[in-house]
Image (cartoon, rainbow, N blue to C red):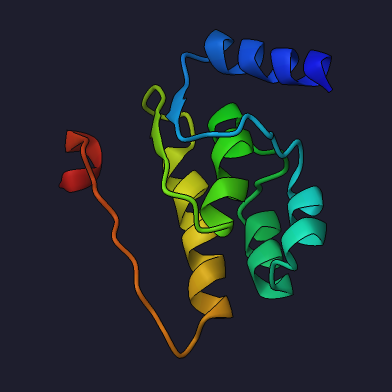
Length: 114
């Protein structure tokens, strides 16, 4: 277990990813995420149709936490997949809690603000 944790930390460092409040549990593929959290088939189909085969390192590190309702602060380079990282978890939670919809998305980059 310690070796896997160290491997995950090295992967994050290699890709210049910093996560606050993270537990370093990485999701290596989207199908594992579906099994763990019962992601709706329509969401998984949308990923496939948009050619998402494997999560990027930032997605590996954060999607599981977003789905579990954890507050996280993550930084990663532009184009690394941060939007899908929080977007997938957000869509899953909104679909799962249809009677109580609530989300806050902070867009701190110029690229996404326009």
